[in-house]
Amino acid sequence: MKVLLQRVTEASVSIAGEDVGRIGRGLVVLVGVARDDTEREARYLAQKAVSLRIFPDDAGKFNLSALDVNGELLVVSQFTLLADTRKGRRPGFTDAAPPDQAAALFEQFVAEARASGLKVATGRFQEHMLVEIHNDGPVTIMLDSRDKF
Image (tube, rainbow, N blue to C red; front, side):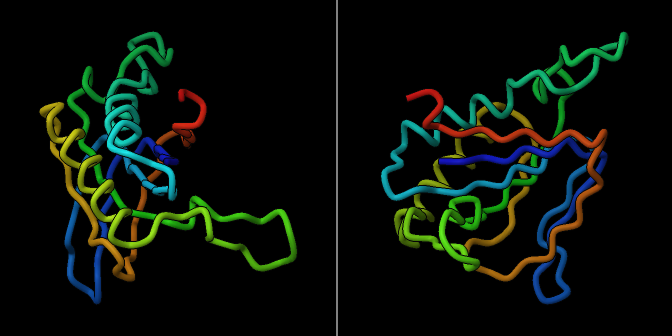
């Protein structure tokens, strides 16, 4: 599982002109589920995402987490994080989980994030979405469950 975190001042996701999720200060969390992922990876990365210290303290150092600043999360499924670009000019997605598995693990990730007590908004699985991101910093961090397990 790969998770791309973007620290934001605000963000939203819309589908066909309808606003389906909006947050203030916090994190946009793009989630890509791989074929070999399990609930273990979803749990680990959700907990890591909310507790990673990427918000500045009074001295401007990365010492605070989304939990510490009561940040909000906008979680969006993004299978393209699993793109294989080693050959040719067209990315391959054979490492991405099939839709049923990916949807279940995405929902597990969202449930774990919500269990933190933070406000969590989401996009819609397998929908074409427009995501508006006001990246703060900019700060963008990639988490990969293969780095842990």
